[in-house]
Length: 272
Ligand SMILES: Nc1ncnc2c1ncn2[C@@H]1O[C@H](COP(=O)(O)OP(=O)(O)OP(=O)(O)O)[C@@H](O)[C@H]1O
Ligand SMILES: [Mg+2]
Image 1 (cartoon, rainbow, N blue to C red):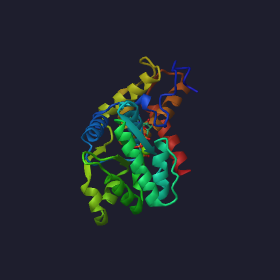
Image 2: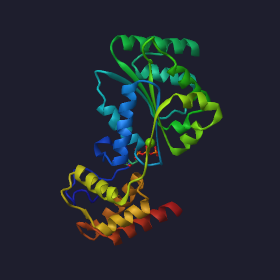
Image 3: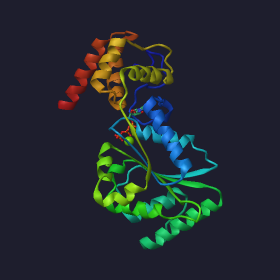
Image 4: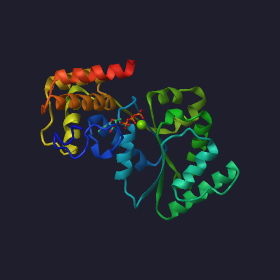
């Protein structure tokens, strides 16, 4: 609604994980470096955790866009509420193959053959699983077994697991110690500080085509930081509604009173 008033090409604060809007804060940068280092090392599992709404899926999409297509082939599983058989079939279909075997051991063999074939063609294969906190113990065990597939020289599959902090607790369980020992890299996304919240807001407005307008005053940013605790998804929600409030006042400047109006609206939605 306010998009044309502010001369924006796009809505700046959508809550979809669009990698084109990615702001590489220090925590996102560090996580990205860890992912890159992890896949270059080829030794074991890579784990990325972070609070709800801190940017795991967005970063994951950016990472997939960035990796060298000549060298890597990736299989992405966005929602792992599946069975072990479905997992194996999904890996095969993500790699452009069909899971023809009926038995689980047959499917594992098929995965093994496909991975060997890709490696002979000079490709490395990444399996990336988002929402890893939803993986059952049986699925984690299946993943561990897949990570055992190897030639004399290298692992056939590199596995990246992304999940909410709950996933860290799950990995701490005693029965998962074998898997835990295989985690080469663990990196964590943390919320943004006040300065980063300011950068984040300006970055998203600039990416949406805004040139200094709309402008959030530094007090408005302080409030947004305080109320969102630096979590990007909450920042987006507050900013979107604050912009609407400023638009209704026909103002190019977003002030604390707009943020207050936004917060009131959000809390009335949340608590009915
Ligand atoms: N570094 C960032 N730069 C730009 N936008 C971001 C960043 N981090 C998060 N966002 C935005 O915040 C919202 C939530 O991000 P995302 O869905 O990636 O979080 P998540 O950690 O995967 O959350 P969940 O735990 O619920 O899966 C999205 O709109 C996303 O675009
Ligand atoms: Mg996510």
